[in-house]
Image (cartoon, rainbow, N blue to C red):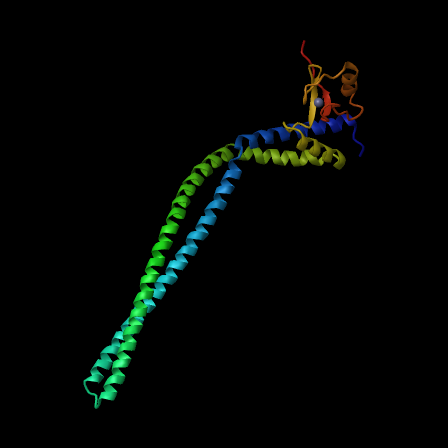
Length: 243
Ligand SMILES: [Zn+2]
């Protein structure tokens, strides 16, 4: 199927009009989607840190419980040894049991010291994590606000955007690959997203440089695809002036 230049230009104009509407929707949303994403990433980082902290504190509490148990065990042994001591037959047995008791007392001292250390470590970790938890709380509030804002904006334009995207797909499918690639390239390189423009008031509708009368006539004739010599945008036609 050989399409005429005029119909190609018409298809390009249609695509441009759809893209401009999509640009406007996204402009209204602004940086919000990115800001929401950044906040979510930041929050996840804090949550990982808090979880790691919780694990570490749990491990320290476990070790405290174990040491407390071993203190109880040692105390049990000491009571048992002290009972035995009342029934010893000679000094040697008595001394041997005394040694065992001292050993258990030493065990208790060591365990108590370790428990103290673990409590200190927990305290340190609680101080460390306090700041993180505060920041996490703040960021969660920020995220709620931003998400709410974004949801509202998206809800207002969601259906329109979906329809435009559908329209865009069908409009783009009408345009040959080579032209579409050029269109996308120009759009990316210009600030206002306009790749296809009309001549308006004797000037390029994209960069506002004057278009000479003969060139305007060529553009109006639509026999070939003409681009602006200043900005490279496709000039699809000349806007009808109302006198
Ligand atoms: Zn131009």
